[in-house]
Length: 329
Ligand SMILES: *Cc1c(COP(=O)(O)O)cnc(C)c1O
Image (cartoon, rainbow, N blue to C red):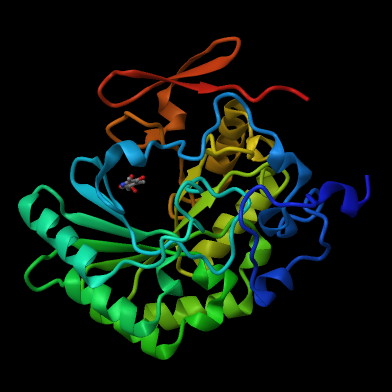
């Protein structure tokens, strides 16, 4: 099939890419190019499997206030905007992202702060969306002020792909704003070694010089990074850029993403290979987020058995969860 045959005429989910990120693709064919795969809609994204939904992690069931998700005991996730600089074709939060909610306003921020003041068990706040760094500097400043470190003392995690898809947005002023907030970590999502450009590394250096520690969460994506060589190069490159590989995610059951999912057995084989090659510093945890578990599952220890159609996984409390096996095609 030629590239045109692989590209969806109409995307199943909002399409947008920065010029910078589009230029990293060597072809526009989403089936052959690991960068194009992440931003060019494929015909396959119109195929929805029975277990797939627009909200695979049940964000909506854990929403304690508009935009505030309290799923795990001591941490909350705040959806500060629905916008991204580039909409990933593998996005798992498509019930919210690009939905038009816009960015959080002062009144909503005040109710979030009130909720946190009422819940002293919460010690970490994840800022996500959408991408928090699509906000203006003054909006970021207002957000940090509402979640200040003097009186509140939360650890903040800014979850963003901006260093990957729009590194020029990481300006000295933005880096200083983030670095001045004690207890702030930046979590990015690099999925392929080709994303580790000079521009990405410069953005990372600027953040680090300003005191911002960085972590990376990759998503295991079929045809993008499901090879031992690719993942080794990716995780070593991240460590060299002083970005700690934190999680390698098994893909969630987002609608129209089955073409990206890798079988868990194959993910475990990749992890065994990585474990033999990489230092602990370079090695992430192979993890899956399942609704109803008290934390993310470490797939290297959580898999109990494989049934004909399901993987059976056990969480830290001994409860079992099921995740469908990818169908051979
Ligand atoms: C992933 C996630 C977290 C953070 O989990 P860690 O395992 O601590 O990284 C917090 N809240 C929600 C809703 C999440 O999905």
